[in-house]
Picture 1 (cartoon, rainbow, N blue to C red):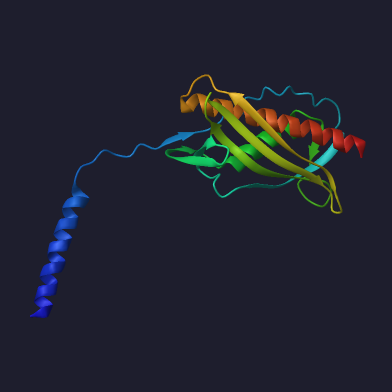
Picture 2: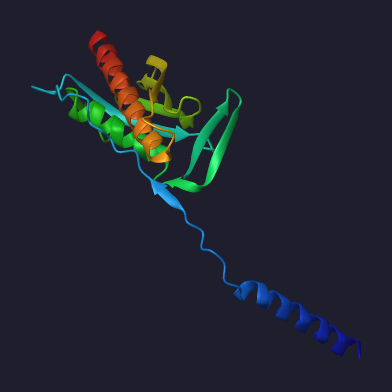
Length: 194
């Protein structure tokens, strides 16, 4: 008898859940964004390369993944639930660095062996509030196998044309290009002093 009562309760529970699972509801619209590399960095790589660098680790904080971040105060960040990057911010930083270093500067890209490495930490890749803007903050270390040759943090904030997220993404892309261009220039100067 207990077994029959248990089956009856389970059947009622499944029927109730079935109604909830088969109801029509509005689909969730997830929006995907990609900050285009504007390539406003002028190509000056003329003549033979004057330096050789290997792009090392590019790391991000655990909060900088696919969800787009919005800074609401100096100590608070919010992540959009339905607005996402098509790639993670470290991928965008790598692409922009490759352009700024190896296409726009006379720097040869090393792909194996020792030599000089450029490591980058992505500290901020976000929308900032009033007025709307895009902010990118990158910490870099230029190192060989024995010591750090140069290290610094570059922060760029670019205003957005409007508060629309699509315009903010363009501002983030512009800030990214400017930040990686600054890093490329500093890397070249550090290598020429060496």
